[in-house]
Length: 398
Image (cartoon, rainbow, N blue to C red; front, side):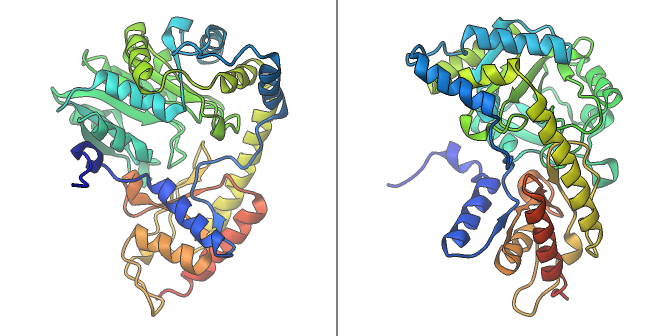
């Protein structure tokens, strides 16, 4: 028999994880690969967060199943954070803590969508948006923001894409993969469009909110009339260097939070008890380590931007947040080194892995075939060496 479900065959393996796996294969063969494929901070989790986890273990109080939606004190702290930092009046009842922001999005999709519903995805988009929509048996509707507009979708494009079947609009700001950040005025224009359609819910993925170089992060739920229409997704992986701790969360209207709680109760139950104690320390204690990381990311952004400008044929926006570049490399499509021809982003990334020993991710996985994603969550030394290798490998193509 050996037949998997139609549901599973409706989407592809995560391209970022696939490229990371290929990079590991090369490393296991003794090849010096510089990995710029995963969106994983190269910083260690701050010490005070780790100490909180150790203390929770030593206290011996946190070995039982936690409440499905998360410990009450963590949910209250997250609600207080939203009120203070984001101007969104969430209460603990509006918060659901999950096993990473990816599960938070999956919970919401599965709780809200019915087969045949449509989800507008701002493209380029994080790879899992499309897959999770398909998992919920709904239809992804991609609305594309071009590099000439910093990859940002406009309100008029959103208006044109809405149909009677539209149920969700999803986007990230700061954006993975482009690093783009929506300005307040741009989000306000989109909110005005959403306000005309009472059946639409917006999923605002704000997991990169701290890694924002514009000076202002605007939460969509804080805009007039959007509190009851918005699911705000966040987590601890990026801003606190806690990828492996797997703590994500949503803030949402109570009816949606209750639905996500019910869904999570059947899928995984609660997030890890010890990870939640670490998360509580992260959200209530000193943010100085986070600010220091952001300052370093900003420095790296300048280094990579200037090095990319030195490579003929590559076009890039100037990202305002997150830790990615999403350059257009289509200038090299059709070119060859005499042994292989670069036809698309997949070929480009495999060429770089094999020739330059640098791991990147094809842009097609994010909705833009002309581009590739490069993470600068790596040391300055590795970034300089990686860009040098990329430039040298591209110089061999004609």
